[in-house]
Length: 451
Image 1 (cartoon, one colour):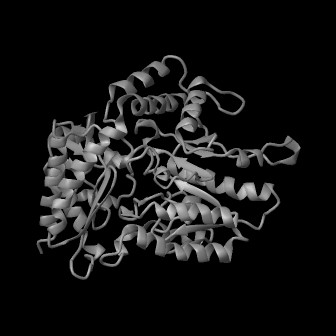
Image 2: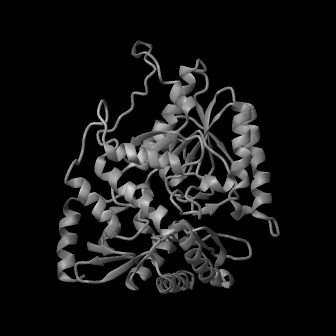
Image 3: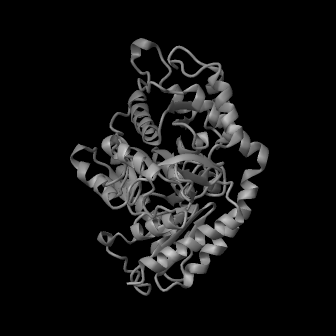
């Protein structure tokens, strides 16, 4: 490693414990110190650049160091950096709440803020549970979740998820949930459409609701794409059926749009593609354009009213975060929403998504690619040992790591999820940068599957 980079790596490894990382891996693959970002590019201290194909863990929407978001945060910094949101308020959080409720599915009129995605899920889970208690139905305290789902890594969020890599070791600490088969269309039969498969899979959810409605507080789902579960995707018809069934069985619907919101699936919110309004919608990641930690849970007037009472009734929602509704983060979020309104982003993304999909689908004939799937600005390539049977490579072989290392050598940041290479780039990516991204992914898959 070059000397300047090496100096930063040595300082890092002396004290920093990195997330989602076996730190021993850094003996062979040191972390890359980044000094600046611009657009889709990150640059290290020796001037090497990396195309950020994963939006820095799915958060960045409009490129690094976006001048308009920069300006909004800079302007806010000159007047107010932070104030307690209990008993006080400020213009950025008021205006952001107005803008979010105007943009969200109809009926979501109240915003409760936290500071990361897992915390938003915790808020929604607690709020749903507490709602039923406040309205005199305290038996409704269990949650229904999908197999292969992911909702974060704090204990409540971990409990309502189902990716065992993250969850298994902590199982003794977690509440018991009801897990239902996923509508993930990777498992569909040859010739079966996404809508047909997702509709058939809904039978499992219907049975769970019939059996457990008396004790179920809410169903929680990632609309359309199970991201950390391998970018597995399903048809919007499942959400349509789920909304109707939750209403019929009097169970809340929590939509975790933390990763899929803000244009990732092609619409501003994934729920729009099913024409539904959840009871709770969790937002984070792209909420601030990827700039600052902020999350929000949007809900409706019925839920809000169940907590609105005299203090002595002890019905208030006593949940808080020190940086709730931080003005700097709210300013970044407002600037990000303004870009959507002013720059015709969703229409422009249709062109970029078509380009990404067309290039990625060239890999469908690769001898080790089982599927290329897409939902808007999310494209995933699933590589397997045996294309005929769908047999995956053993996870212990870490073939995705070989792709990651190759991509870094070619100046592209790819971070496969198991045996799935995916693209979720910032919306400022260009067609030529898409070509580079896909070409490098193809090279990496060739390298990782050659033996």
